[in-house]
Image 1 (cartoon, rainbow, N blue to C red):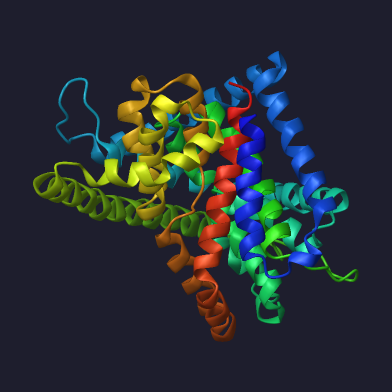
Image 2 (cartoon, helix red, strand yellow):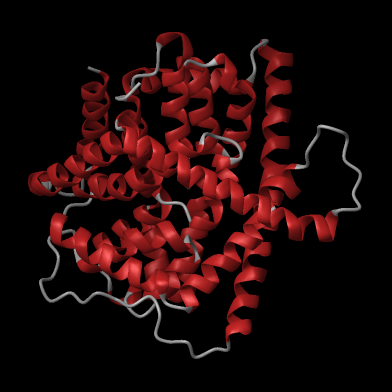
Length: 391
């Protein structure tokens, strides 16, 4: 039942804001949704899928342990209370190591091979367009803003509708460098499933909000033009980019968490209810339609709103502290929902990234930025709804 209500909600909102209601791509939506059901069933409802997810989670935990070697060497002298941990060191600093691995795999052309042919297969099945299919896969591996550089030659030539689709994919997918950090805060199986589902969810929402036909002569872009730079120069670039990302996320967390704390205390002093609880009531009906048990909808709604206003790290940190008070189904739904970049801050990052490549296209993105955020949020709702089907 809740799968139906969640789908109806997503489609209803998408239909209301659609740029071309008469040409919504129902067939493409059906194919992509069928892929989501198959993937989620195999991952969450079969012994082989459950074991595979457990192995992937175990692998990422192992990577985090390896990253600790470099972190301990640099920061090992810091005094930490017994049994305690430092979020920056334990969750954010490993991003540097994961980013280095991504750089190596990209340099030896493993990632380009995976992205190219997975994107090709996705396009053959769903007919979303080669550029869109390629970008949907590549953004889930490379992340943004770096992924926009792989299509910098195509961006100035894109019409407004194709530009919307690639930006929606960038907001819905998360980079490989972030996965291990996410798994420190929410169960790894939900992170992995959400990564797969979000790729398709973003394309489904685009079929409703932003339907169009692609050019039959569209060419698949290449993620790498060759190893022109020396290996250690490329590796150093990825390492420094990973460090910058960790610092940026850390700075945003300090600011956003402090802001939420300030608002909570201010609202408590004035109306005797915290800000996060108040916004939880606003999002509670949506949580209910997604299948969250009624006794958990306010808490889950609060986490949904926190992610939208701040970012997924702030919401995951809050979830980590209240997960024991939520049902298994509520945990599954909200965990999957949080695995994306759908928030106000990311809109600014994407707009700036596109603008740095093309001033004109950056202006287009700024014009539909709120519609972009709405679409990415609905993609997260769709992903969470599908995951909740199995609990």
